[in-house]
Image (tube, rainbow, N blue to C red; front, side, top):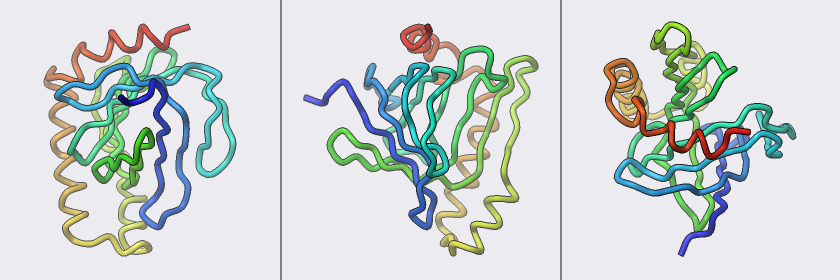
Length: 168
């Protein structure tokens, strides 16, 4: 039986620290594992100690090349998806490699945008991303650009039930 706490560890492709934090496991369904982070959670961000100021919910899909962060106000991004390698679980720790590209849906306008293409291209060269990894990352970004805008789950309403559990 898995514990109620999951350690979420994001690194960059070269193995450098990116994000690391404990999260509360809410559910597991056909979409993946749903976890939540409350305000005040101690974390590591870009290798430095940090404290989460705004709670969020994270969906860690079973086999896809992305993770989805769902945010309450006042964050301007309602949904923030990191393009990643598929999650790798070791007990209650999940390891995820962040591949720089992000697909974001803005709260106020509903605009869906692709971000950090420049960082992706820089790291593609610097870290030597293999061609198949580049194809998978770009395909995931293309899929999310449509999915975040067309009303399909998990980007429509499903995440709201979990956001209520992390709200202050």
